[in-house]
Picture 1 (cartoon, one colour):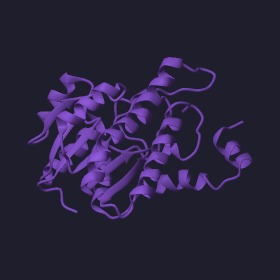
Picture 2 (cartoon, rainbow, N blue to C red):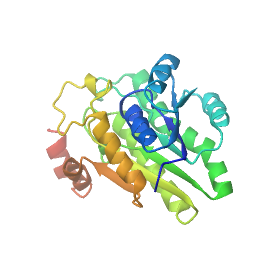
Picture 3 (tube, rainbow, N blue to C red):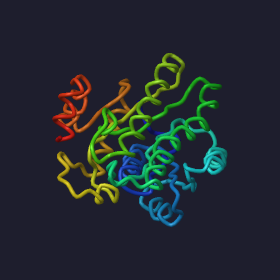
Amino acid sequence: MQFSGKRYWLIGASEGLGLALAQAMAAEGARVILSARDPARLVLACGQVPRASAVVVDVADAASVAAAAVEVGAVDGVVFLAGVYWPMTAQGVDAGQLEAMCEVNFTGCARVVAAVLPAMVARGAGHLVITGSLSGFRGLPGALGYAASKAGVMALAESLYADLRGSGIRVQLANPGFIRTRLTAKNDFAMPFLMQPEQAAGEMIKLMKSTRFKRSFPRVFSWLFRGSQVLPDWLYYRLFAGK
């Protein structure tokens, strides 16, 4: 697959992984439309990406998503990267933050998919790239909202892939580990295999150019999370929950 001459809509692309991916795709000839909630950040981001344009969108608002999809128009592909995060345990639950993680990370993704998919189905072509997380493979301590929202996103991508195989619409799922961003700066624990945004963007580019459905990275770190799915509950929680 080549990006030259293609139009891609990147949602959640004003900084971090989204911005790094936009820069990498533009370097290979793609025309990218960047979206995020903050107009000021979008202006700064577009100044760092050749030929980029900006469309403000709040994925937590259905009307905003619908209006943005109309403004963006027909595209060759859509990459969903939007997300919010707060570390959270059950003992320290914050209702507003918990709901925001579910609303933006999962429901926001569903809104975007619903807004762009009918046109792709009608023409029998398109490319959907959804950003999950290694934290979505199984429930983790201290990740009450984030892990759940990413598990939902990953299941959504799996269902889309199952339905759209052979339709001309490519569906792909990227599951990154820790990336150095404004969000992970909230963590007060060690983050193994911490990636720079440019490294993670390189992994996503490899996925998008391939025929694979999903890519979990960093590879060695991902083995821990993928392997946890086959552990019995008693062993998994003894190892990961610590009590």
